[in-house]
Length: 336
Image 1 (tube, rainbow, N blue to C red):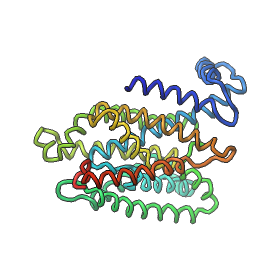
Image 2: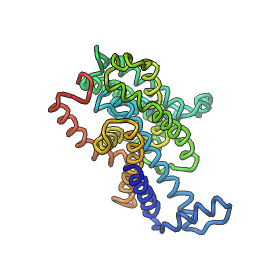
Image 3: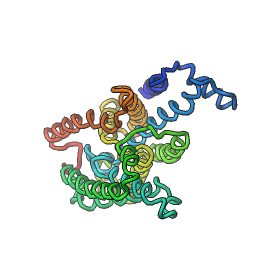
Image 4: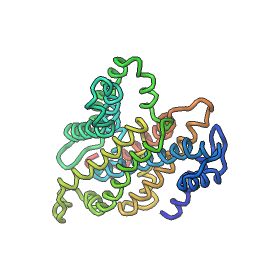
């Protein structure tokens, strides 16, 4: 299934690269890449392909891949089907960190030197720690407590973010537009910055696929089979938090991708993480590229924040999943 999914992703990338305010043909994308690598001059349509369209679709693909990976890791570690970077507040914490840099970097240069991805990661990690402490119970992390803790902690960071935006009135419109989720700010630099975090995280997570399988036996069961539970759990949570923070710092807060895509991939491949993680990453990339294509063409020339598109699809999915979880007694989640 993975080779077919990779072929479908390539087709989606070509489609999204070709469609837009200036319609291109796939050959423009291919020749733009070939000429740029050879250092040759680009024709006008090839310039649009190289400087605008390709960075945008690749950034969308990397963001979807990262958020899907983060969702699969959170769900695996917490043994909870509703664990998602958006629902458990991690994205809100990362968003606060990113906005903190955007608003205060000019008056506090050391903050700019650290960079938005790093500050976003630190606040996202703080969010995970707070939510885990609030939600943990003997034997696991119950679904209801996880969601409630995520909503509360996320709301606090959202309120703090709103305060920063109100205080920085001159910058607030641009920052808010970026925070709502979108890829209008895409550049080759942002693609490279996100790839540096996402691709190594995928390789490490794939290497820890068996550990994630052992987590499904419960932490006690995994420890009895020789897994250093606390160290591996910390590493997996750090990976999930890192890719979430990196995605939020370049593309804003985009919800429900990490919830929907891993579930769809799990239905297709089963629960084994060695197959689940690569498929979730590929499907997440394709889903986000298509969502961004819809966001920028639905009522063109007005561009809808892509977070709205994912929320309109993810909200009903979340309700269906919650109802299904209740019917099944929360079988997929620990202590649900």
